[in-house]
Amino acid sequence: MQERGPGGRAVVAVVVAALFWSSSYAVTKRLLDDVGPLSIGAIRFTLAALLLGVLVRLNRRRPARPDVRQRWQLYLSGFLGITVYFILENVGVDLSTASDASLIVATYPLMTMLLELVVLRARMPLPRLAGVLLATAGAFLVVRNGAETGGSSRWAGDILLLLGGLAWAGYNVLGKRASAGRDVLGVTYHQTLAGAGGFLVASLLEAREWRVPDATASALLVHLAVACSVGGFLLYNYGLRRMASSVAVNILNLVPVFGVIGAVVINGESVRPAQAVGGAVIIAGVALGMIERGRGAAAEPDEPGAAVPAAPGVTGGAR
Image (cartoon, rainbow, N blue to C red; front, side, top):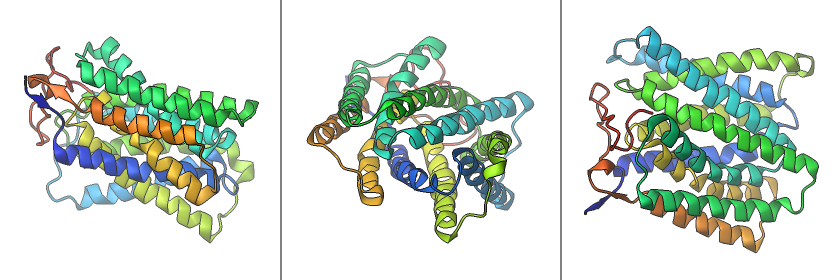
């Protein structure tokens, strides 16, 4: 049978999103010296929601507003993928290291794949399964080697980051279903709005520590809002609609490769030879995971109003 994979534009979109997101770990680690982890999320996603709101208003071909059920699904997915995930990520990064944070992301495709199997009863082609497992093995190789130099706080941070993977898996599966037939800009806006609201409430726990960030911290917060939140989520949601959730999340295993480079350049962290080997294994797993066989690999329609296949034998049905 002919081997096929996701569309080229969709793959490029997710790869660029991974490049944007890879910088978030090192940038967040740098910001934690001046801003609390909950406040970082509140500022980042409030700025992103405001910018996305302006873009939605300026869109002359704005589609109809999602119905009530679809809006609540988008809000829930945004709360899981933004508020819950990034709280766990920011606190986890604070306790762990930027390189660990970026590398643990490689376990997320396995979590998403398992959730697809349980919730969506999705078919898992053998190459994708092998690619996810290979990338996950590479992540464990790198994280285990790096964690040997850390203490109990580092392990606690790693555990929080793994729990964040469960929230991210829920975001992918639920969000894919809720975004069916919707435009990417509107979907990202509703999800970011819910995530920002959750972070604003959570950030009240840090109210006593609030202070005006300096110029450097402000620039880093703008980077997180514009590049990592608006740019990253728009690109990722674009690619996610055109491939199965586990395929999209498996491509995000490139985040560790980009993230380690950022951790070395920005934070001066060291990388061991075994971690480099793990990075190579991750890249091989990502490439293998994009191989599809047969008609089930067909990409989803590009148009917002197009029907989304949901048959049990078709990968990439409901999100």
